[in-house]
Length: 86
Image 1: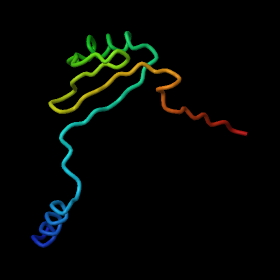
Image 2: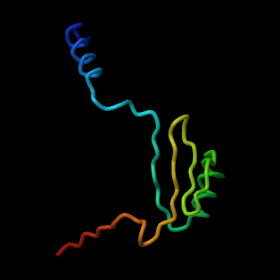
Image 3: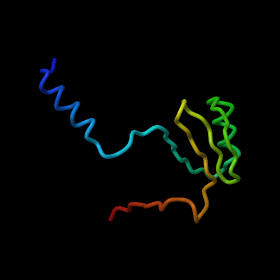
């Protein structure tokens, strides 16, 4: 159990933060086949479809958490690195 002094210090640090609280969260996933991934997330996982943006589709994961599936392309996909051994 923590002493009251330690709890007081943690409370002060928490309320001294300069950033606002996080109220929503979106996680992006890139896929090579948006239709197959859409079927999996809707039919198998049962996520609620929210919005179709053409090359991206948004699903509700929790009250304020979202998952966005995006069609991968050479332009939109983050760089992929490969490691080779000598």
